[in-house]
Length: 179
Image (cartoon, rainbow, N blue to C red; front, side):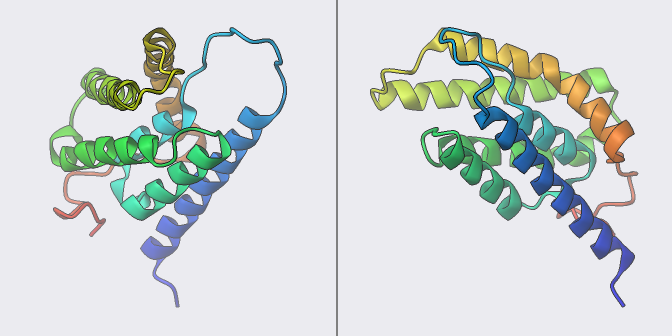
């Protein structure tokens, strides 16, 4: 018989991969063919950071890396750049899980905002140092602001629609696993 906790983890991991597939499918659809539109939020970054702060045991680092590497390849971004930065940001938030379990949403949003800004600044810095001509600070800044503004919507949808709830203080051990 399968342990209910293990079954629950694998169910939510499958939901995460399914949501990633849905997001990338919608993003690659040719819905808008005009150039020069403002970039939208990075939905999977919001989802990943929201789930890491609520249930870090649902998203192991290998799953985050696999999903974001797939997104990098399919969305024709520099392979591995956003993957590495998201992994660093997610592990930063995972390490602060004991601190953020009992915090209010405003504090969580500010910590997530700082993480999102650091991820986008890191990506821009690497692109500029690499000499990539498409490294426009303004567009990345707009996308970072849009991602920060979308975070509360994704966090609320994760909580109320998908059912990813915060863990209680005794529910996780120091490795981020539910006990």
